[in-house]
Image 1: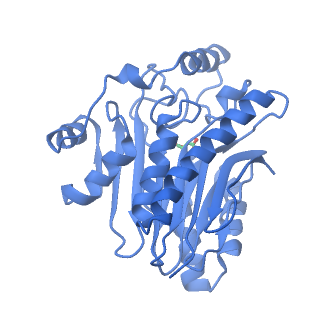
Image 2 (image 1 turned 90 degrees about the vertical axis):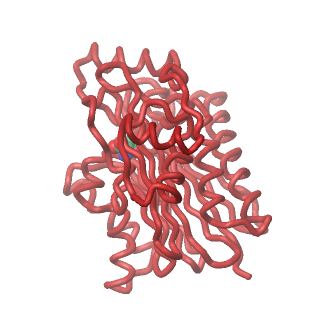
Length: 310
Ligand code: ASP
């Protein structure tokens, strides 16, 4: 039996230490911890890596501090367009959703796309129609909106700052970000999941890296499970998540080296952010090129670790 491992992230960015009050920092740590506990309970019970990343990401989507599900950021029209993806490493099945507006837990929607649609990526209102026909609960778009997100959008629009990475604002609530999880289960299987509201003030219709398999999410038992966060356009152009796996498969890189090189390469395509990556030996890498990344992990038999800055 393999020792299970689970890691999560809640977004990377310029996380200003001064703006992060002790209470707020404690809330983020608690949110990360809760998500890890949800995923770990699945793994400890002999469940699959796929179920574990699903459970962890549902918890992060339900936490309004993070930019996914409830508390997701708003686009330029003050609407939510949510992206998500999930992939399991044994058969490399994958499912993803782009620009949905009414799916309460987009990661559950991505999983339904994977398991029941015969497709990998579905988008918009027709994807919601499919999910609803499959029995998925849809919510009014207002469900996702929090007063903090509306204030954040108005600040960005008033400043003329254009599109903003969720984490790069002036107050700490501007910086919390995209969420994701990677897991290795007791049978040695890997899985990854990523979910996001995207970038504040993004153009309506813009789709980021999150639902693009190989950019924001990737899993292959032979190499790694990867979930990314940061400027989506750069992660798409770098094919970032897959590049971690490819460096391992073709170049013989270790997980740590592959993950570091990919993050180091992001500025070359105008990107900032980070990723979490896990291989089937349980090696874990959580590199980022920003001042912080909300993150945490658990190895079987050890304590949960959560961190925000370096
Ligand atoms: N990668 C996400 C996107 O571009 C944003 C983020 O990670 O905060 O949609």
